[in-house]
Amino acid sequence: MGILAWIIVGALAGWIGSMIAGKNARMGLIGNIVVGIIGAFIGGFVMRIFGIDGITGFNLWSILVATLGAVILLFILNAIRR
Image 1 (cartoon, one colour):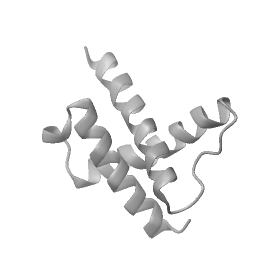
Image 2 (cartoon, one colour):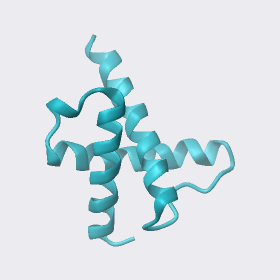
Image 3 (tube, one colour):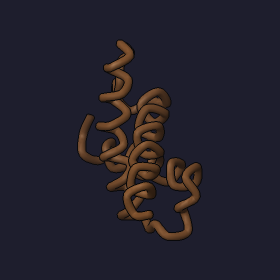
């Protein structure tokens, strides 16, 4: 995947993940992209633990995996901040 695809997947996954975690009002575009890209790595790692392919390219499955990772990341960050 190219850098533009990572940014698009990161933005979508970060935005969806922030809505699920209830953080959408406090995050901007850059925050969503960063959370989504880091979430893609976390989601890919979690999927590999279960023996499932993680990020496979620019497709719906990759966005779902990245969103899962973004939600995990946001819940961890929320737990640390409390």
